[in-house]
Length: 340
Ligand code: ADE
Ligand code: ZN
Image 1 (cartoon, protein in one colour):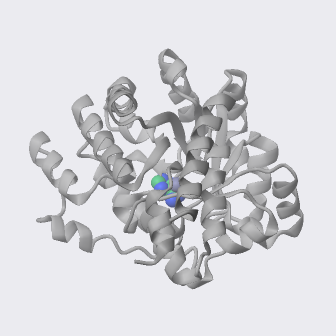
Image 2 (cartoon, helix red, strand yellow; image 1 turned 135 degrees about the vertical axis):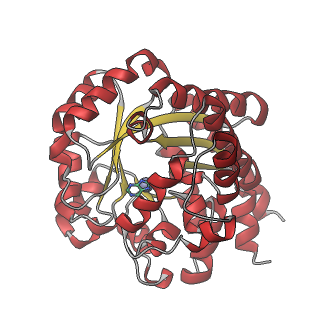
């Protein structure tokens, strides 16, 4: 095997951009549908996989929201999250910051607490039994209105000691960050970290807004920031991390070909980029698959693999001392690879 793929497999990594509902594999979707008596428009796991062909973000989102309908009980959310953590163990992902979409559940009558407690209890067990540290980031759906986001923030209040931050996801075009300026201001007052999907399909102006109107600590995706030199200069000067998702970008036609993926360019410009899976069940792979795809398509060299992994810990919402522990383990693994 290419020694770079061995390196990727052996390095401890952090994943910072992964929607837990997007880790719902067809097999689990099918079995939860049966367990809960939910009707799916697919006759088999194979048919579900066949439906995963997307021309754009909205194509995917339609299938993604439909898939969520099988998630009904706290146990379902636990099982979903635990299955993801098992992939983390396989991939040597030692820290995760996962997104969840409360409105995707509350809007179909599932209480906030049901989703939250299922996810949180699996993460707690993951820390205790697998040694995987974690944070939860709740996202507001940008195709809904700001009042709905405010209502979600109110529902989250009893759980805020276990919520690290808020994000913004779903259909980007036509839903600029400024639409949510007030609710993000409230989230900042509550001491929450701030992230937002921006520049995935939307224009560079939405990335500016995420920085200026929302006060983001990280940008999710950010690909289209590269179209604006002044914006790149700002992102580099402030070392705003970008959580980049290569296989997602390919499957949602953000890039035409993996060989066109801008991640090496981002690093060359001095951008703190990280590699993430976004919705691994829908886009063909988990974190290591994403790194391996970059090795295959872009000949991603060893030093850049290490930089991307280092960035993943540096960009994490962890206390400095915990970050340093993760980074020390990373450096030890790098050292070991060099001497073998
Ligand atoms: N929700 C889940 N995945 C998403 C993505 N890639 N962009 C926007 N919203 C999402
Ligand atoms: Zn995403």
